[in-house]
Length: 244
Image (cartoon, rainbow, N blue to C red):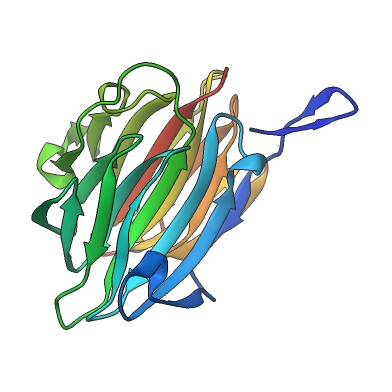
């Protein structure tokens, strides 16, 4: 949303964070057990109608209790593990690679009934106007298709929400490969490393890290995403929101 100082809009530059040092929460939103939670980015620091970007780990036997967002729309991307998702009273199993869309007003909960930690990436965006869409679960890795020497999966988020969501992507970069991101002036992007090791460069800075590194790229910036491992693939998710 950027920040207004004495009537002047003051945007931020790139932002980098990772998933280290999360808070430990008990019975999150009335759920069970233990979750580990971290806000990666506050929406006030991002261009566009972002509310927040978060990372959550649900320990075995834990859950996030049923709740309804009245002021934001939300996506979950399951990073690892399996979980039981409850959406408007209907239960389904979700696992690594699933993208869950939660429109405004949808009642949802998520529980880890397995014996390993379940990790998921969360983005919340402020809504627009009009009727809410139906919730959906999209199996993103099944959409991967060749693009140059990389593979890319794209999910158009606009039919799923009233807010200014644009596109969600899964980027798969081979060893030594690169993807270049030229962010248009009417949108902003958050990149999050799922697997492998990366060097993300923008605005003259380079952010190196492994799974859990997140970098926000503002409008009109160019970012490069390099796979720095000689033998393993790099997987990155990219969330794009409009800027008005």
